[in-house]
Length: 411
Image (tube, rainbow, N blue to C red; front, side):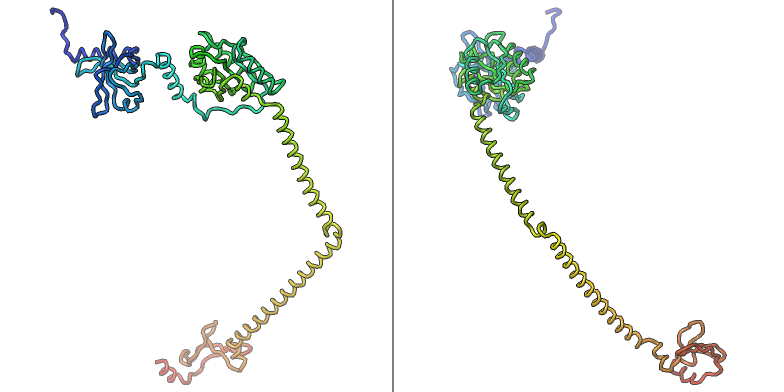
């Protein structure tokens, strides 16, 4: 032991935890085995062991994951579990922290496809609200498929039957094999560069799951998603649904059905155009008839047939309005004159000038002072003014009479 460093159990456990957590292969691993020693305590967590003929692996699935479990697991059931490997410090053992459990019969390829589909769905590639409508009458239809397969013959046959002369542009590609995904993606890019291609059909005839695998690849799914032109997929038979189908703007069960979806029937379009033309003609004739009848009513109206007489009628009406206005104005003025005369008479009855007209006079101090009412308001020798009906007298007071009486009265 000389020269050897002694570590504590917790230090060694922490080191093992570090090693396991930094190993990317153990961060998301699928493990196949048989379930044994399954325990389901009240906490909702699941504890069990995965085993095969030569080894065992302790596993735990926490409640937040176990609640989403669709598979009815039990001892003896062979499953495939996905999770991450870590050390449980208290027990000093490594175990698989399970996040998903599937039946072992599903297969690894199916698991990988499911994982890819889940990831693409989270990114929004399958969202319905991003899918675009197809053109009613495309100028040119792009086709991506094998130039030697039955799918191309079906698309051409159906398209020409429905709309003779429809323009089809083939971008040939392999539809199965290792090179097929890249070829399909390149063909989509080429057709997207053609300005007159309004819709694209991509697909192939039926086959096994392995034959259709090119359309379940990420590169093809993303190429369909990136297309500026609406894409219709037609892969395999009606029951086959690939990732490309889920991303496409429209899915057809077969290549023939894709051609029927994309290419309209020429005869039906002609009938529809004829019907619309007939309706437009009828609507135009109806509007013209209404306008014609209105014009005839205007032409035959009194104002158009006898305009001078109608003008005389209008002038006579204006003359009547003028006469009524003048009479009303005169009556209003007469009424106001009478009111003014009445108010003037009332003012004159209370006016001081009316008193002067009867021979009385008003005595006041000079310079417009107030009228004098009592003799003791002035003294002998003071000047006063006497206002008469006409004119004014400048007077000098010589003597005062009745002053005492006034003083007594004032006192």
